Amino acid sequence: MAGMHRRDFWLRLAASVVVAALPLLGCQSVQNSSPSQTQVRVIDASYNAPALDVDIATTPIATNIGAATFTNYAFLPPENATAYVYPAGTTKAGTQVSGQFLVSEQHSIFITDSGKGYTASILTDQPAAAPAGYFSIRFLQQALKAGAVDIYLVPDGSVLADSKPLYTAVAPQAAEGYTNILAGSYTIVVTPTGVTKTPSASTPIQFMAGQVRTALIMDAQLTTNPPVTVTVGEDVN
Image (cartoon, rainbow, N blue to C red; front, side):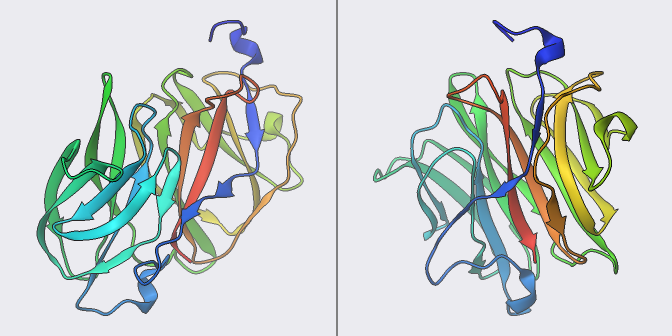
């Protein structure tokens, strides 16, 4: 990155949950949904997009959202449908994507950059709780300027130097699938690939058994320290 030596690029932080409230539509877990419904949310990871509204067919599921946002899940009838992504307050879609939204499934409309514009794709989320004693987590790498990164979950009481990366050389725009980790207190650490030393420390995050999480990595827009941010969305409580 400009103005920084690569060895100085580091981030160790407690991940924060960002959830846009959607009255009457929102839920963070499949457990309370009807077996005849599907659930769909939006993850906005676009630097290029303006504030956005998102509809599934004719049903609004997100309003006036911005980058690094996870909306609540909306309960919808299962169907083949098109997700329309509009600049907020307009009626002409900036992008759209079609897919199958089936019974008891969870999906995310994932909005990312495409050239100077933005595009949408459909992610399949994990609708079931993690196995007993574990939590499940996946990572979406959208830190385009950062380049390839290593991702660690450092247990409470341990240090980065003694830890092995959960993922290595994760390229920008890569999506890593869910992995099961023993429930406990961890710090998320993101470094450039191959970097193993950092003087930083942060508050650990408590991950409970059964939880399912999606972590979104993005370039920080207003600072170079930290150079990236991590936002964690709740898939299943």
